[in-house]
Image 1 (cartoon, rainbow, N blue to C red):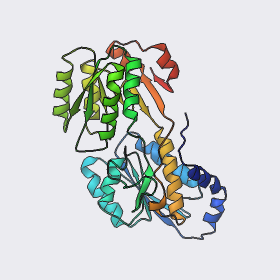
Image 2 (cartoon, rainbow, N blue to C red):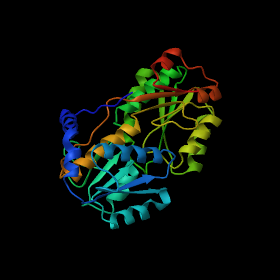
Image 3 (tube, rainbow, N blue to C red):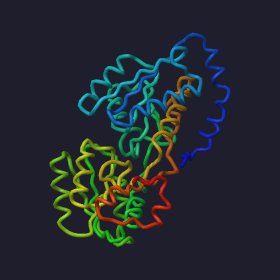
Length: 321
C-alpha cells in the first residue's frame, strides 16, 4: 500500500524534479558528499539500497556527482559513529530513526540533518515546529500521537476477549507520551483498562510482563522508538501468551501498524536532493504519513492459541504465515 503526505506544496515540489537530473549534470565534476548514519539492524541494507536508488533517480550518481558514506552502529557505538561522521564534514547527514537523529544533533547544529522515524518529532525534541522546523533538522516522521488509539482498536478487533492492556515504554528514550495518552483515551469506550509499564532494561521488562500475565485477558502495546529490548519483549510476550502490538513486525508481535519504511526513505532522499540544490532544512516542513500498513502474524497467533477473525485478515496489507 502506498504512502502519501499531507502537504500539497511537497507534492508539487516532487513533480518539479523531472528536469533536475539535467541540472545535476550541469554542475560539472563537483562531487557532493552525503553521509548516512544507520542503526545496526537487519533492515538497514534494504533501506540503504532504497536511498541509493532514489538519489540516482533524482540525478545523483555515485562516482560522478555524489559520494555517499554509510555508517551503521549499534547503541553502544552510535556516539562514536556520529562524532566521526560530523568530523568528516558532509553536506547533508541522513539519520535513519529518531534516536540516531538525536545523537547526531548533539554533535552538530550546522550540518543539515534529514531523519526518518522519530515518533512525534516535537515531543522527542528533534524539531521545535512541524511547519517550519528551524535549525538544521527536518525529515519524515513515522507516527503521530493519535495512533495509540488505533493500536488499541486493532488489538480489540483481532482479540476481542482482551480487557487489560499493559502499555510498554522506555521513558529514557522518549517519543511515547502522546501515544500513551491516546491509548488511555481510547480504553474506556473499548471496554479495556490500561496499565503504564515503564522499563529500562531486559530484566525489568521480563519481570513486568510476567507479573502482568498473572491475570487473564491481557495484551501488550509497545510504544516509542524501537528499544534495545525489543527481542526480549517479543519472546516474553510469547512465553506469557500475551498478544503484542507495535509499529514493526518481529518475533512475538501479533499486529503491526505503520507506514512503509522504504517510502519514508524515498521522502528523505527528496529532501536531501532539495538541500543539495540550495534549500534550507529549517524551511522544509516535517512530513507525516497518512497511509499505513496493517500486518497480521498468523505464526504468532498460532503460538498464542488465537484465531484471527476473517474480517481483520481481509483488511490486512500483509499476512505472515
